[in-house]
Length: 333
Image (cartoon, rainbow, N blue to C red; front, side):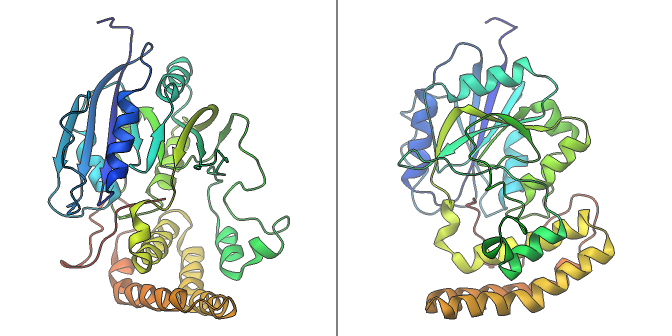
């Protein structure tokens, strides 16, 4: 083995992803090698019961399965799996992705040639080949307020959200954040930043990590000429109230960590008092009774968990799990 060729470890967090996991792994097995060596492909399974781990032994991959036994959340499952490898580069990959033959080679080559870059993301497309707008600015309070009030949809040029929807994602550039569905970085960066903050059970852990990476001097780069299919929604679409709940929960945790006490308190108040009304009104106007019920269920979960959220330290990495028996989706994006 050429010692100059970097080793790549891939971590996939799985939670009842069905056939999507195998389809993803098959595309990794078909990937073009050359400028990297595949170290370990680690599936960190959060207590799946759908058989998605069955019959994977025939894949031509250095595959390892980490059975967590319960749903630890996305960040915690990643942190534990990363510790099982030692590759110079590390890719965190969603199970609802499928890679093109040269996706890994192109993105690894870029990262290897640009040591000033911390995280590399690729262009994500749907089944028809349409490009997802997946990059984002670091969110500020105004971005959340625009979204809560619907201003990002009514007057997008004046009140845009943190997602970079105004850009077609057809050219490469440095950005604040790339979506965590394809998150490539040097292992040294992940270890230096102590991995994901496990308070973010689901959502915003990638935003927080990208912020810390940029603060350390290693920003994100979006690579448009490397492409991967991404279904979107992941397995969290199976449990929509919980998906809404975890998004709101992680938003409050992110605000408390990054916005300061006053702005975080204001955003929390808007989230728990004004946003449920705006969500319900929009659902009623659209004639969506299922969305009404999902919203009510999501906010019941949020209100029940609010004391725990507000008592969580605003610094450091701590356990973000809920009470035993809680429904915990770990599919994401």
